[in-house]
Amino acid sequence: MGLIFIRAIVVFVALFLTMRLMGKRQIGEMQPYELVITLIIADLACIPMADNSIPLTYGLVAIATVYLLHQIVCLLDLCVSGAKPVLSGKPSIVINKNGIDATQLKKNSLDITDLIESMRGAGYFSLDSVDYALYESNGTFSALPKPDYESKQNSLPVILINEGKYHLKNVALTHRSTDYYNAILRDHGFKSPHQVLIMTVDGNGKVYAQQRGKRYQTFNLNWEKKIW
Amino acid sequence: MVKTAISIFISLGLILIVSYFEIAYVNSTFSDFRELLTVLYLKVQSGKATYEDGYATLTFWEDKKDVLHVWLPHTSINNVENELSEAMGYLRQENCEDALPKIEILINLTHSIPESYAIKIKNVF
Image 1: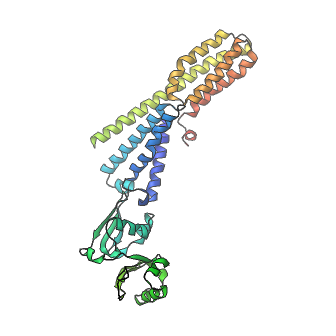
Image 2: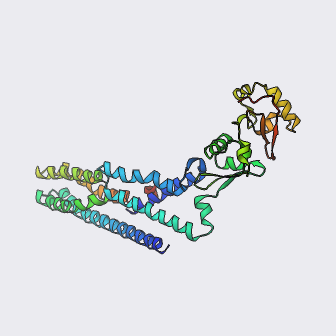
């Protein structure tokens, strides 16, 4: 039993560290330790139940150990002020006043398409419709919209450049060429498309573009007519 | 918070008590069993062993094995059971030569079984 107790602790700690290292992408509305418990508790109960060569006490002690560890983590979370960021992680601000924070996205194993997907899920279709956006420690997405954000999203934006690479299908949707966009980027101070972290355009020709490590820009391409 | 702390102490206490009892019970049972087997081994080696000598060891095992099933994987207990049955069969036939290696295996199992479930680094990983 003592051996099972120690082995259960080792597995719990290993899974917990793995979940913390994987970032928020893997979590989805649970704290890391809750996910770890969810992952292992079913097997702890089922294996001794189904395999009659293993004494049931092995499963019971392992479950009791997981319960004990859960209570310890909860207690640390409540009582030790510095423990919460270590155990549950901190919220990651992925959009701030300067635009997208690519470093925070990378830290959480997310990319810009994941962020855009989360924004759409929360009802924000344009990257400039929010002042701040963050992933909570349990992986849920929260955003602080701009006061007039609804006026900013009257056409669906599509990604033209993502991390320096053109999405040629989307470029074709706008009935323009990459040369056209290269010239526009040069006009707005971008030396090459490779420096572009993200560039989106909506059907009205409104562009959101951000250079790596710099503040985002929005500008209008003054298209004669709305494309979509 | 107090409730959480109490539940931690209770569950930790229960686990430690159960673990201690398990270690003590398994070690003492296998130690007693080893003593009986050693006596039997010496008798078999001298050629004076009878089926009744083996029967005392068998009775001891039969008494203890049900509780051991709570603490140890059943396959380990079945291994002991099989070797013991073979040894008893040889003793019934008064075949000491073949019974001896079986008892030797059983003595080895009384060392190796508690060892493989003891709290040691090699067993944790």
